[in-house]
Length: 113
Length: 117
Image 1 (spheres, helix red, strand yellow):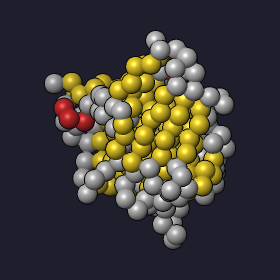
Image 2 (spheres, rainbow over the protein chains, first blue to last red):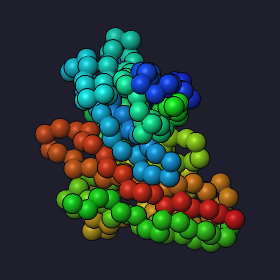
Image 3 (cartoon, rainbow over the protein chains, first blue to last red):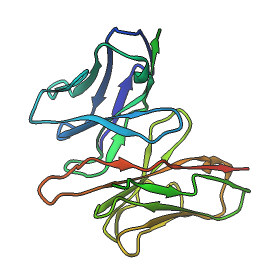
Image 4 (cartoon, rainbow over the protein chains, first blue to last red):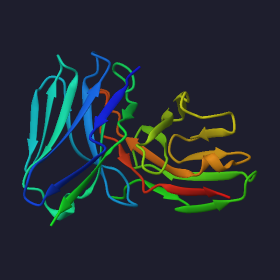
């Protein structure tokens, strides 16, 4: 089964700067890596995902990179804005080819004015 | 269209009481997942349905937890004889489960916040 480690647990960045959150996974067969954003008291929402046939994916200010050899993937947020403040979770399939996903423990991102 | 909905949004139960939490997935979504989210933690997998079949219940913490989805749509998570450690947010998610690709996006409901006193 999969084990997902996420760091840092808390991250503070100045508004306008970039934020990077990193996750490692244990199962080399994993091939799907979603990132979710959860604002206080709200539901987790998918912000971007990547599959193992690509190394990078970008959507406006958000990008995800995947290094299959090292078994880690990262979320990059550029030009951070106050509304980026939230908890971010990475995830990976529980088992190979599985619809079930295992979440990291989350990173609380604070955007400082 | 309508997203995943859950009810009740908040539930206060006395220890030992039974509770039932409801999830209405997005119409047409084949897969349905239940998660437990403790304060300051990520969602922890509880159980998974594909249509009415419960394919994985390995995450259920004890035999006091029971889930069903009898008609392959609405699902209910039941917790019997609630304990204080059951206090958490219970999240439901659904996904389309395309026959061409596994691991479709999971769409979450707002959750039910359960407090056991």
